[in-house]
Each structure stands twice: as structure tokens, then as C-alpha cells.
Image (cartoon, rainbow, N blue to C red; front, top):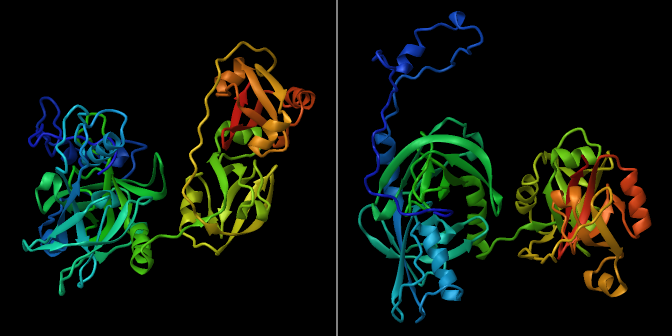
Length: 489
């Protein structure tokens, strides 16, 4: 698992009960709720389904359990003292973060002492193909798969995709039990689900819960619409299957969120349709190819939508367009709001990377955009997605400034234009007031205001005065461009 995991006690507070009770009344609340009719309580919705008892998962587990496997990995360590700042320190932090173990940077490691990991997986074909998480087998020199019948096999990593955290393994065996795939798109919030895996190495452990939400956006995860559940997931469950009550796999358990280091009822699974698309490519080519438009996007907030005169804050706001990219060739511009791709709606900025990432390089995408309030359609021929560039910038010390926005600016010098690769803009020298509260920093380059290009100070001042109390600045910060909404007053 991934994200803020830490070791949990083997025996925790287990005083959870099936029903809550009211003082001086030992009737379960659930039973009492059926005794009051909706007619007696105006405005109370009539339940469509009554609770008739918890489901029995035993038959399901007997059927699917043999196809769930335990995965153990081995890595060799370089001789190094794991102290802050070095590559070995970073590698250990990443490993321990994945498996929920607190990191102690002061421990001495012996030369070539093996590092061992654990996880779960499941068989997807009778001839030995398996799925698990990429982080379970990352950088492993040896991967051992243990079946439910106690047989061990050395596995080959066919391919691994860190972006979606999916990996495909192969063991040399025939006639294996394997799982059936379900449809993650038909899963409903509130539906019962079951996880099977090896938390802390306890093989074939079963936990159950419900689907808490669908299509969750997680930080730094732009390609996976996670299924959120309250199923108990712990270190070692990573890569294991999430089943519906039909015994079909609907997801791969991957991450949990926690403030305490223990399980807190927030588990996340990769939808199986996403995983299978990745698996198919890994089995065919050993790698995953994804489409790329070449735009930098950001969420369209209510403030930005109002600045652009849009009725709804829906879509992906284009902050920058890469030079020579498919997006530039198609005519996309900063300030465009992408609201659809090939007929599929883009209501949130996170929708766009998923839709484009599921398309292939060379494929044509029909992009619907809103530009200055008018709708238009553009055709983009996608390129191959390259690893994202990480932009960074340092801000000089802030100094007082005064005008309507609180900005002091100057034109870009010719050498600065050449270095940044842009035709013009205004460098922020001082910032205070509304601009500072909005996040503008000294060193930022203002290249536009409300979709109007900015090239000199006088023109910028006129645009500011005519823009009212709401406006959106297009700012270049390092290699990235973003829109910053500013509200006066």
C-alpha cells in the first residue's frame, strides 16, 4: 500500500458493535427505525431496501481464495549508512512508506544485506499470469509467488507501470485457478465488497466493507479514478483483489490514507478496467503507451469561471501550451476551457488526463473548448506521453508595492524573453495586497490578464482598471504556466 501507511497493532480496539443503543432503551436503533412510518415523520424518505442481516461471504471466499497469492520480494542493498540526504536514504524511505513501516534513518545496514518485501496478487489466467501493484515488485531482484496450496514459484516481472501502480507477473504453471473480471463502472456506492490478501504476511486474510465513493482523485495520481472503500487494508494487502458479491474482481487494492499510521477506514483500489488496459499493453509490448496533447491544465474554480464570464465552473482550464505540441498545432490556447473529448464530458480537470491517457499515440481526439464564452471544436492528433517535467522556482524576498492589485512590474528584457522562450510579459518585482493574497510571487512573469496578452506596463494598467473586481492573471513561474484568480475587496 501507499500513502501515509504505518504499522498497526495486531490487536486494536475491537469494541465495535453491530447496533447502537439508546440509554434506557435496549431496542436496536436499526430495528426501531422500521417502527416509525414516513407518514409520522414528514420529509423522511422511505428506504427502498430494508436491512435483513449481514451477507455471508464464506461461499464467495471458498470460490475465489485459491486464485489469490502471496508475493515476497528480495533486493540487495549497497553498503551504506542510511542517513538523511543520500540515494540509499531516499530508497529506504520510499520502501518503508509503501509498506507502512516508520523510517529510522540512523540504523546501520550491513553490506549486501537483503531487503525483503511482501504483498498480494491474483491469478488472471490458468497458464500463470498474475496482477499486483507496481510498488510491490519495484526494483526487486527476486519475486516469489506462493499459491493457496502452499506451492512456491519464482515469478518473472513481465512489465510494470508506475503511473497506475499496476504490474504483470508470470509463473511457469498450468491449470491454475483464476479470477473472473467484473465491471468497475457498474459498481454502486454502498455496495458490499470483499478484499483478500496477506496483511503483514497473514496469507488469505479476508476483510469486507462497502464502496464509499467512486472516481476519487488522489494527489499526484492523475490517471486512476480510484474506488474508495472502508474495507480494512493493511501493509501486505497491496496488489490483492477487491471482489463484488458475485465473486468478480472490480479493483486492485493499492493505497490507504491515515493520520495515525493505522487503518482509518479510507482504502483505495485501482478499477479493474484501468488495470486490464495496462495489463494488455504490458503483456504485448512490455510497456504502456499513452496519448499526449501537450497542455498544462488546472482546475477551473468558481472565481476563475466568473473572471472568464462562464456560468459554471466545469472543465479543464488550459494554463500553457507546449511549443510544437499537438495542442499547439491544433490551435489550443491558454485560457481555453476544455469541456469535452470525443463526446465524453470533462467536468473536472482530473478527467482530461484520464481520457487522453487512455488513448493511443497517433489517435485523433475531437476537443470541445470554450474560448471567451464561445464554444468551438478542435481536432488533435495525439503524440506519445513523455515523463512530466518538474518545474521549480525560487521567490525573492517580498517588498511593499502599491496599486489596485498590489503589484510593481517591469517589462521582460530581451535576454529574459530568449531564456524563457516567450514573446513578452511583465516581471513581478514587488507584490502586496490582493495579488499577494492570491499567491503571486516576485519573479513571476505575467503574460496575460483575462485572456488578453500583456506586453507593456501601460497596457497592463489599463486592463487592470477596466477589469472590475474579479480578474485572472496568466502567470509563468519557472517552466509552468498557471491562471491565478484575484478578487479585489
